[in-house]
Structures are given as structure tokens and as C-alpha cells.
Image (cartoon, helix red, strand yellow):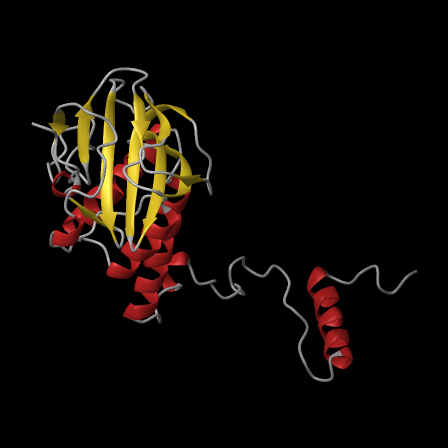
Length: 259
């Protein structure tokens, strides 16, 4: 008869326990029927503790980078979310609510740039030096607060809007180089021309565009036609004049009409 057949359960457990002590050089073997949860692994830190030891400058840098990327990728997006983000950005730049550095970075990302907060005095020697791109009545003045029409709700108008008709030719106010041809969420199809010495123009709500980026244009040369490419879907021309990327009222710089 096998001598081990009559061992009770506690004797088997004690024998295994003794064998374990010998193999572990005095260390007791793991206990059977150990209750769950006794040996839990250390709790991993959650998302809430990631920024715990960051200082204010580091947090502001991360926020600035996130805002910049948000504005950059929504600058020319056709969807409603992108249009909303772009409008909020331009309105915020008007009121100076964001950091100045964010303003500069996002203005570079957006082809047009934001609205400058600093006023630019009228340059007397440049008065009457630019041709009006079209003739017509001004329907939205420079500096007007947008009401959701041709100008985004709550934003400050960078230029003037001139009433016109579909297909009317739009001419260059001065000789220069075309630096941008593309689209803007609020202005539709646009052309940007650099006249030199810090003077530039932005012409928006165009239909047909007859010039290309990098092309040299002469004073009075046709750049395109008045269109319906802006969200308002009415034939008008958006006309901006800028000095060192700061928007100025174009009226004093235009050739006065003949009496």
C-alpha cells in the first residue's frame, strides 16, 4: 500500500510548503488560495498628473502651439467648423485678446494676416497715388464692425467694399508683383499684389482671375473680374490697402474722381 494515500489535505500542503522553503533557501513559498487584490501593481499616473510639475510658461507654450495649429489648419478649410474658427481668430485679433506671438504666427499662416491693432497715420506723399480698382459706391466702410454680411460678425473691416456688377473688370491700383492667388473663407477668390516699399493690396470676391502668382503687373492692368465667390453671393469688390501689413483706409490714397 502506498504510504501517502492516507495523508490528509493539510499534510500535503505542509509537505509542499517545506519543499518550497528548501528550494527558496529559507523563503516561504506562496500561499495557496491567496485573496485577490493583495499584490496589486502600482497605480499608473493618469492624464491629470501629466502637467502637475509643469510651470506656467511651459503650459502657456503648449496652449500657444495648439492654438496656432488650430488656426493654421482651419485657415482655408471650406467646412463650417473651419469658417467659424477663422472668424473667431480674426475677431480676436481685432480686440487683441490673444498673445502677440500667436497673432504673428497665425498671421503668417493665414495668407492675409490678421487685423493690426496699431493705427497707421496717413502718408501725405502717397495720397492720390493709387487707382481705384473699380468705380462704384462704398457699401462697407473701412473700420466698420461686421454684422455678418460681407464682413464677419463682430470683426473690424480691413478695407472697403464697393458695389459693382458681375463681370466688371478689376484693375491693379499700381504697378507691382502678384504675391498670392487663392481663396479666403470670408472674401472668396482673392488676389494680393505687392507694390513695393511696404505697400500691398488685397482684392476679394473675384470671379475670373487673369493673373498668376509671381506675375508682374502694371498700373491699371486687369487682374480679374467682380464675382460671387464670397459667402454673401452678391457682386461687390473687397479692396484692402496695407502699409507694412497694417490695413489703412484706402480712400485718401486713391486718385480723386474728376469733377
